[in-house]
Every structure is written in structure tokens, then in C-alpha cells.
Image (cartoon, rainbow, N blue to C red; front, side, top):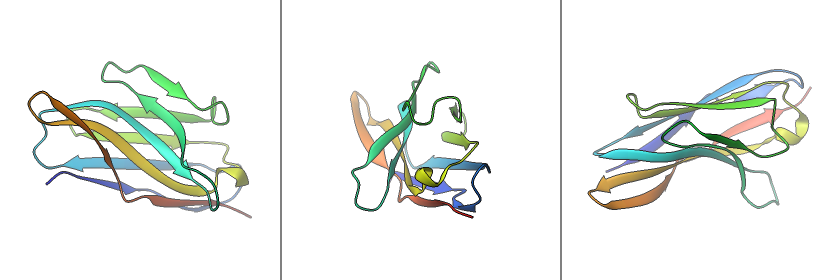
Length: 120
């Protein structure tokens, strides 16, 4: 059974930094796109950053120049380095991976979410 497990969330002061990690486990033939989404209370889930198998990245305008997404294909992991954090970054952060768990079939998988709170 495939699982994604996030870690690294917590409470940080404005201007601080956090690094989120997400590890995939289970029988996986190949990992395609990876990314991070977030959902604040009362809001819809929104895209934060994505990284393709080849390393091409995209970012939400609100996090450009502050957040960096990266991946380690060998370890089946995706990371999100978050710098210059703002109170409006407070949300539950979810990792997402497009995984080929059966030859020729790619499906989207989600982690359980990790809380990030930016507050003084």
C-alpha cells in the first residue's frame, strides 16, 4: 500500500523558516510530478509549488522567492524550504505525488497534512 508521510511542520515566528519533507513508501514503479498544497481554515486547498520529474518548478505568486521545492527521486522524497514566513502562510500543508504503482497507470496520492503556524 502506498503512503505519503509529511514532517517538519510547527510553530514559527514571522520571518522564520521551516523545511517540510514528504516521503513515499510502498511499491512504486515511478514518481512523476510532486508538489505541495495548503489549506487555511475556511479556504479552499491551493497549490503552493510543484516539481516535475525533470526538475522543472512552478510556484504560487504568493510564495515566489520565499519558498523552494526540491526532490530526491532515489529516496522518493519531496521537500519544501519555506523562508521569510508570514502569518498568511499559516495552513495545513499537504504533499502530493503522481505515482505509477501499476505499469502504465499514474494516480495522484496525498499525504495526511502537516500544520504550519506562523505567529508571534
